Length: 192
Image (cartoon, rainbow, N blue to C red; front, side, top):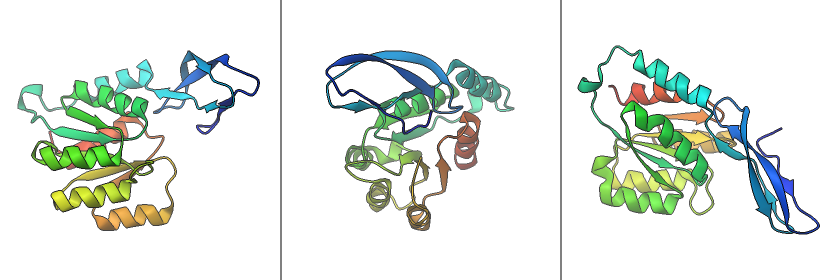
């Protein structure tokens, strides 16, 4: 199954079992029942499986930095896939990060304009419907020229990636990536 597979209904409302795929390891770890209206499609749902979540918690618990000396950082997660935002938040929160999620570029820019002093890092999806990642990043950079951002993408063109890196984004992570890679990139930017 690919991450772009859709399930369509052609004859009328139908209840279907949709797989829930781990965004980290790409395994199907659960299913959900959805009532799909006639003529529509639905893609698989995404989340994080318990094995991947446990691996991140175990690997981070083994770090040489005691929790009491760790500075609390604020991370703004911007992605139009609510489940992916939730999964990132669920992964980072137990590691001591304060997370805020926004479902689109416009909301993120508005939030960032009010509270940029509390945001140490932005995890930014490249492809979003209302305002793409590049435009969102440029608007945030106008608010704070020293913004730190990691771009997350599943299918961006090379030219889009070059443009956002040239504009000042620190790195690009291509989906799927492991939770440990994300945590390592964050720790490279925000030392414990």
